[in-house]
Image (cartoon, rainbow, N blue to C red; front, side, top):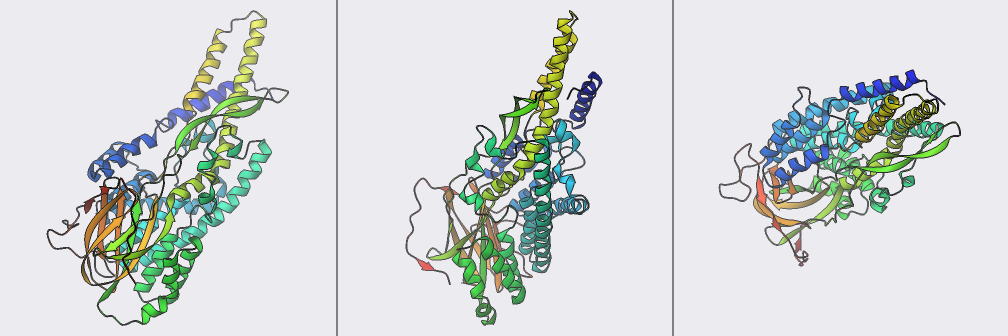
Amino acid sequence: MRLPATSLLTWLIVATLSLSGSGCAAFRSYKAEMDKTIALASGGDVNGAIKVLESNNKSKDKDLLYDMELGELRRLNRDFQASQVALMAADQKVQAWEEASKLNAARTGGSVASYLVNDRVRTYEGFDFEKVMITTLMAMNHMDLGDWDTARVDIKRTHEREAIIEALRADEYLKVTEEAKKKGARQSFKELNGYPVQTIDNPEVNALKNGYQNALSHYLAGFVYEALGEPSLAAPGYRTAIELRPGQGLLEDSLSGLDARLSAQDEGFSDVLFVIETGVVPARASQSFNLPIPVGPQGQWIFISASFPVLPPAAPYTTPSVRIDKDLDTRTAHVLDLDAMARRTLKDEMPGIMLRAFIRLSSRAIAQYQMQEQINQQARKGQDTLGMSLGLLALQVGGMVTEQADERGWRTLPAHVTVARARLSRGQHSVEIDTGEGRATFDVNLAGSHALVSARMLGGRSFVTPAASPGTPAVPLPAGSKSAAAPGEAVQVSVVNLDYPVVSIPRRIAP
């Protein structure tokens, strides 16, 4: 197929306007921005991390990523109310996405600009596991504030969101596959020479049921419903968590022991759930590969440089251990592997990413081929080819500059979440958490029949949420206690880095 000169000019104008209309989005490196933000938070300077986030998002209309990152950073600072405001703003954007997607599932394929410039100019609508994590963290914020009834509502909405995503993705996958076959586009990232296939196609990734269902959310559902005295709703939460993360003894015992726990008398003990978050989700990076594109009347193939997102190899993971009062070990369960979910998400997205790249690069390749043909014709006729040659050069350089893969993603989320559970006497206890990266110790003060304690291990700091119970926010600790802090201040505990393997010593196991 030969495009007339007017069509070539039109293509150039549209591409230029799309690029200028996108502002700096086509060139913005979200990875570089968030690397600096996370480095500050890892060193304990959360307020500095927030300032960097805000300096990189000066637009009046904040996007989804800003709201999500701010919500998590505020949570690290133990400012749950402010965290909730940010997460609610993010949730409203996702609700708008849900409603629009129900009306038109095809809109998820990409904007016109993404077919002309790159995927960075698309409106970021969030990965599916991120959408689920928004309401999961909202539920945890409400639990930390003592409002477990509202946490119950957030949990219910989380599971409704999972159902919407499931229906949408099944339909979208079929549409992308059909469109790729129709256009003759490559459908598998395994066909890209040099692509690091093992980073998104490995046993851990393939073992996931999907890239969005959240075992942590379902286990929290069971714990919250149990605390509120609703066993008929608690059991399905535990059951779904077991289905998503099979082989975890703690999860199985939570379900089998439900009736016994609910019928037991209150003897001054708290059923404590520890939620331990470690690491950060892997960051996407843009990398170039050669993609074959058919051009010319004979349909010959040429290779043109295309950029696709890649993920680094997964970092080693060690299940944290939790020790109470120096001699009581608690059972743990690895309930959420966001590192693997991020990889599964990219694997599931690659057919759509490759389709958009194929369409985008086909237009460029055909335009370049036809401009070269016209240059050759002019040269044979002895005509001046300088103007056309400069246009071809501009088209080639412009394509190289704008061909960048989308690196965006909710970077402040943890890579892994582990839960531990113990029945402890009410009052003050010391807690020690060992991970593959370091050890943190802090104190908690328990009150009520159930309590939540969360700790985020991030670089050289552990950000701790003291125990909170239904109807009772985190109980203050006496001055001088480890992890005591003024209201609204971050509870930060220095992490002692371990340069030797953690040796397991036989100790008492919590019931």
